[in-house]
Length: 548
Image (spheres, rainbow, N blue to C red):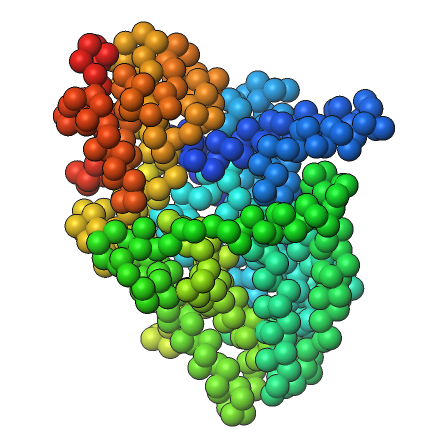
């Protein structure tokens, strides 16, 4: 087996096993509960359609109606893994069965990073790039839930990788046409996962166009130096043609909701995502409340959530890429592929810049610019390798290994320390969870931290108590019950007015819910809670007599 493939397979297996082993501790997030429920509905569509093809359109409306504001590819994968692992084999509960689809795409992302990192910086690049991505605590957390953000990141990376292969000399086993077709199919899968993949073709075209200027130089350097072959120039982007033809076809084929009324439903789908009104001052709390701060939102959150040493490596990679472009344009670095540099650089910066645009809706966390993170990891890996070679040309491996240890040790500790509260992880610059809370930053989001108080709830809640889960939706509560993690006799309340027990999760924009809980339950003293570095993430309040 070739070294690149061996590294890629090793990383894929490691990520798959790690995600599966650590997933049970991760709670069900607000969005994930909806996606798991939708996946269960999707799983019932295909047997129905096969039994009665004439009624397939009516069945599509019935079974794909839940969560029809998001496409069907990733949720269809969740449906397959849930059906196989949970229903057919009985190996897992329904949530873990659905999550297996996300684990597979996380493993796929790790393999792609290893392969591309190997092309850019040799074996060290292939080994370091996945680590730079998955040792960011929030990225590691996103490898667990059956949600859409890491899957679309994986598929957008795969589309970009296929595009790069189709336009460069480094084709591998497929022909230029083969890679172009692959990029079209992969774009369709990305579009079928989440709408932000629509930005990918214009970005790839812009990178190709910028690379066409002063980009027709010969490349003779070895793969370990970042060169991509010995061909003059870069090819016409036939992959963009394949994307235009195959992308929409795959989107429609994998989303039966669009099999009729296609155009109106696509318009409604896109229109839904243009009407959100979530802004970053809701996320930042007291640190950033007024415009024009929104423009700095993704940059600040990235700077305060990526472990400091990994952040330095990524920033160094961006600077190195800019320097390589400048040197190549001036004719001082003929071994540099300008098209490749533009592709990596724009892919690393555009998703963050897009979310920074003031009119773009903003949400808590890092998920909406996560597609930038694999490319920052690739650039960071190459920068670490290059730094090691410059510091000690005779023994670069020793220096690279030492640099990697310095970068990865504190990051690995942060991943382990924050688990399973990955959305509550803040880095050294923020002062960890405590420092971020002091600054008024959001302590967590998505409602997944409720899982930490379920054992106490099962032991102490009075029979048939009515629970207000607040940030955890009723769907997730019922999924906990079906998976045996929450007592089946407990009921879901609609608010503190009809609740016996209230589970409050710290969200800056919803602090009024805590005050409502105190007023209705006539107590401000929690009976249980979950904490990270002594910072309360979730607290439980109970009426007298309902907590035994």
